[in-house]
Length: 442
Image 1: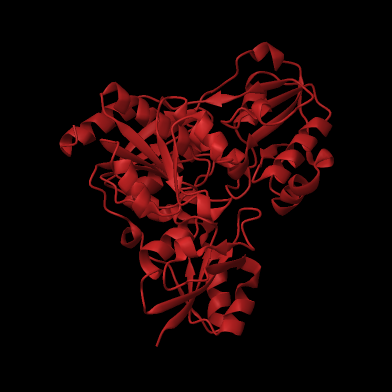
Image 2 (image 1 turned 135 degrees about the vertical axis):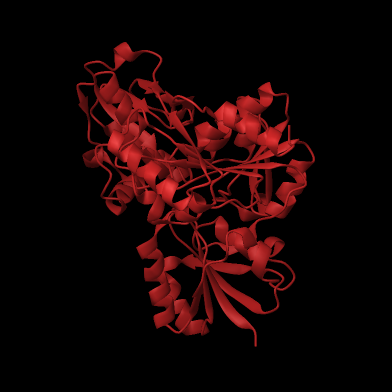
């Protein structure tokens, strides 16, 4: 008998799992996707251009809140959980609900869904959103460029728009980003790389993306999203840890899987974390990933003119996913405000409007910070209106994208930047070079 399936996701891993496991598997019939975590990605259709010959009408996408109803109405046999950065207990809550409604519940194996590349793959993953994957990827690109190697970055999917136009995306310039009408969240990942001359691929069909990336690279860098596992089988698996959230490496799915599989473990942000928290993370790595080589790293924050911060009442605009489903109560803008002597960090909650107000209510752990959420034009305008309404002297924006080029803001703005920095030895360049030589890649 054919088993009827719901794939529970968030517009990324769910589509990949469909492509590599369910799409041409006649044992299953995927009835629906559900969507969570990202605003405005439900109530769409996974189109026939992607779903294939067995799904000529495409596959509907529903809010995850409809899961129990869908199981009952369609007599679903199997629920496949397929997104990341979810607390272990919350994964089991979904499992309990599915089983109570009469469906089986599965997690597809990490290695089972990895595609094998003809080119060497370096995977950069993490145990939580906001641990520091992006600056680590940028540093690896710099190292490989200095070694004379042509690297291409393949980014974890962020298909939040028209799925038909996002099957395979290639970004080599700011113009490519504009043409693809990328969200703030996409721009945060793509712009800093293309500005350094790095080609970035993303999309939905990662078999086709891999083929394209292989055609113009010597080494592929997998730049992960959230705390997801790689879509490509890595020759070197680098995992970033955040000592501001000690113990989370054991508490979130599938971040703990990344911990266990790590070849190299980078404990980031040691310049701002408590020593006892750093040691706690180190102990967990030693216990659960004893073969992993540990590197200590910093993410020092800088601004172009620190004098403008001192004594000012500032609005701290932080990377959106780090604060929302990443669970951090603060980010680099808050650290910069404290470092450079701001008189006050102004709470944006009383000024928030529209979808930004809804997001702050949805994530009550967020303190006096504003997540730079921009999943579409409406939310970007709500973000703009919120920033303009806040009574402050200065906006400190730590998102990697230049918000002043996307929003019309009525007050001065100062960008907070952060890059990878080694904290002692061994450093990333030393470890990466040695590992690549040992594996025959260099």
